[in-house]
Amino acid sequence: MKREFEIIASLLSDHSRVLDVGCGDGTLMKFLSKEKNIDVRGLELEEKNVEACISKGLSVIEGDAETELDQFPDKSFDYVILSQTLQAFYNPVTVLEQLLRIGKASIVSIPNFGYWKVRTSLLFNGRMPVTNSLPYKWFNTPNLHMCTIKDFYELCNKKNIDMKKIIGINNNRTSSIDNNNIRFKNIFSEVGIFLIS
Amino acid sequence: MNYKTENIKQLIIKKPLKLDCGKIIKDFPLAYETYGKLSEKRDNAILVFHALTGDQFASGINPITKREGWWGVAIGEGKALDTKKYFVICANVLGGCMGSFGPKDVSEQTKESYGLNFPVITIKDMVKAQEALLDHFKIEKLLCALGGSMGGMQLLQFCASFPDRTFSAIPIACSSSHSAQNIALNELARQAIMADPDWSKGDYNKNKNSPKKGLAVARMAGHISYLSESGLQEKFGRKLQEKADYEFSFNADFQVESYLRHQGYSFVDRFDANSYLYLTRAMDYFDLSKQFKNGLTDAFKGQKTKFLVVSFSSDWLYPTKHSKDIVIALNACGANVSFAEIKTDKGHDSFLVNEPKFLATIKGFVDSSYNTYKK
Image (cartoon, rainbow over all chains, first blue to last red; front, side):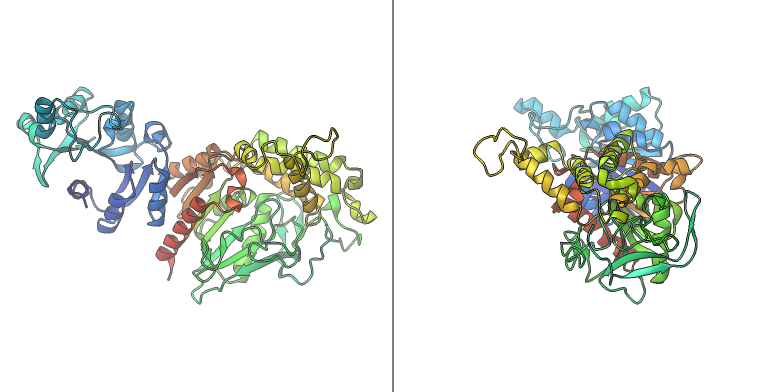
């Protein structure tokens, strides 16, 4: 179980209604429904993952978050989760707006392009960075819109999105991020998790 | 059709049933078949709704026609609906011709087949009749109800009319209302039957005859709509039927022609032409949203049933969009719904053939539902 999932779970209240956008094979969904009695639904693009979720007894809808979030009514979930996928959309801002429309709150995690390993990789090797959280080569990456924790922070500010909590992960260690330490945490966090509404 | 439908299981429904057309029927037979064994706790029952030309003999050898049951790929020991675990029930629909009350039955008053004097049946009427089967088996709640095509429509109606009678539901390749194209294709089939002089305005049984040509053409048209363009092309292409060159005639030169003729003419032995008229009409009249004030969302309001909606990517008769509309309505009222579009070139008929991804998906859903539901 990824450290990230544990943190996401800790941000959710028991018995809430959750939509996991891009739920993969349902690992997080299974964890949430078992450990926290959460009524969780998923949206997933890959046929194989959809079948895997269904076999686990999870409720999942096959579809593309880029175009098919319309089907969920306003505020129909307590939380909408988007784990490390925002950067893969053509229109991340539209997706973000959809998440906030559907959920009373949303949890968005991003692989941080400002992480020091990413920075040094480009600086010293002169090559596009390949790290644990960014395992792709430049020619096969699904990530169209990479950003840093600071970039996403600025976007939320610009869009008047309320950031209730920001957590950075580095080597399984977590830390809280705020306006005072963001320059520093933007270097030392591999992943950033935002609880927004 | 030439078959005798004696010695099959029938439930005589004594309670009067008020049909949507206003007429009341009672003491009528509903033919059914079961597979597997009902558990003591009665928590392993699955109700299968059949499609337009199906019947209650879903698995094994149909004792009347001596052919394979229509859903042998899905029902049986070790299959998706595992009869070692589950008790599967399938009934012949009202208006059908495999032992349930239908237009070929003989009226007590006239001593003749009903023909067009048979009342017009709707999907809702079919479902109401089948609910009696659950009472017959003393099954309060099914583990799962499922069906494809017209079977899917019956299932949607069943869930809307009797929301507490199934734990889970799988509507497959269906629609909550028949589209203009669906109605048009059905009308084509009906016109083919009615244009056959042997149809005799529906009274062909009096002449000990039947509109074989018309029904065969209707079946051919239907069959084309069940397959995809690429599926047909791959299977037949322009291959010739046991000949090296064109005959320069109107015989079946192409394999696809020969195949269609076979499909058409083997169908007339097992199906009643008037039943075909009645059942296609029932499908055309089906519009679940019209039954509720606020449309389809209202139909599923308060549903506790767990849904899995399935569509097939190459189905142009009931395309994925129809299924998605059902998913949207279920989502809108907060129902528990999963949706899967199976990528296949086998067209609308994908649910009837060996399509491993589809069978694995429904198996996963039914098995996981059972793990939650079993008492």
